[in-house]
Amino acid sequence: ISKTYQEFNLICNNDDNAKLYQYLKDKGIETILGAYRFPMEQPDLAKLANQTVLRLPISPELETEEIEYVIKTIKEFYS
Image (tube, rainbow, N blue to C red; front, side, top):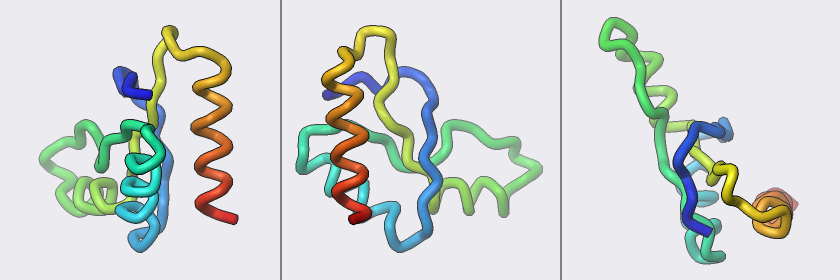
């Protein structure tokens, strides 16, 4: 599943972010680490967001089965 065109952010703790990214990648789900944009006058917030935000696939082209697979896979990671 590789349709990360829009913003659907999942906020993770620092330890889970990179691990969840790799887990989803291994399951064939494309994600992007870090927040898309933050104002330059908020460097601390931007740094925190880049450490904790994982952008999930979202697109009108996603099939219901693909959405359910992403949800199921995230639940598996946290169980």
